[in-house]
Image 1 (cartoon, helix red, strand yellow):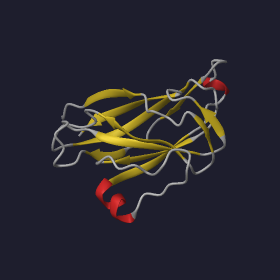
Image 2: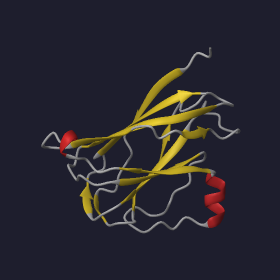
Image 3: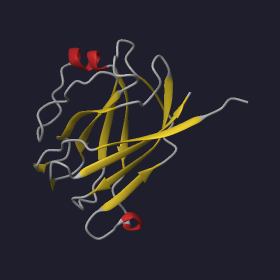
Image 4: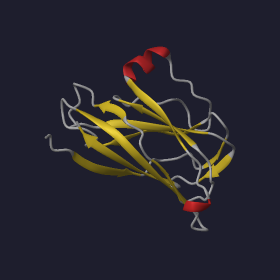
Length: 157
């Protein structure tokens, strides 16, 4: 029977410090180091989002092998087709809004489990298994630069 390895990685993306509207870039790619072993794959199993700004809003998360900006913060996605191909997209996950269950008055925690998205780093990656994630707003809200923290749970395949 194969031995399974689980681990988590926490990142704090640099968010737009100000108002963003639905469909606008909230944060450009942030590195998720060690998401998978070099020349191997992992399953993204879960994501927890701490919302320090207490926005109770969903966020669209775009995963990629190579860091390519989606566009200007607080503007609609404007990545070119050429840069999208260079980013080597891995998938998109809608991180749900914080519900009453995860509300801690001044902020909130949202968790999404059983994602099962296969991810792998770029073959030319020298950062030992890093992938990247960018975020897009799903409503009109005002954020601080460090208003969101994301924890990703991985299973090494």
